[in-house]
Image (cartoon, rainbow, N blue to C red):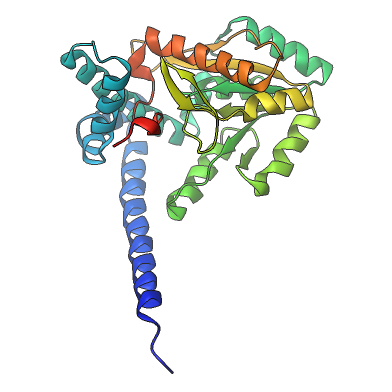
Length: 304
């Protein structure tokens, strides 16, 4: 049998190395998760928060990216203050990560959390009328806190997720999302039929909209143009769904949350509605900047 072409052979080696890298990364992550879950709840949240803040976040380049984004948005802010926000952002990222893997403890703690804001009454009314609701948020505080509080009250809030590049990690990540109680659907064709049916049946669906999407229109976000998907607004218009911004805002103790559903965004056109979502999230970030995930490549037009 003839040997493979050099380019094919190199591609296979590269793919094999990448797969092995994914496997090793997942082993480390699973080890951290299992070790943390063996600890008392408050201890595990604190430990993983500090681990990501001081070790894993800087090693992964997240601290550098957060500082880059903060300088872009607030160049006049003192460097020390930007470093403090970036550091606390990583702590919140770590806490959120292990909270969401605490598939029994975290939902149980959120079950009795008060749901504040006019959006909850709008959601309740829509559910009574059999009308769909699209709940929209960003990577802020812990976005699963409010979903968990709603699921505990009997609302079948579905989640839409993006498959991760690491297939080993993706498997248990999806199982964790499912453990919160509502249905979950993958982005793309595979999940479209499911979440559309969920909406048509008068269900509720959560969408996170604050990551860069190639080809999406640039809308203002924190004073800079950021490519922003219009899909939440388009779905709301297509299926007559309420479009409600919501937030799980971490409190100063680091363990509890204010769970808020803002007033629904008025139906108009996708760009206007999505800009309203950007403005809502921007206001939350300005109020407590260390709760947003500054580690994303949100403004790729400015990346080096």
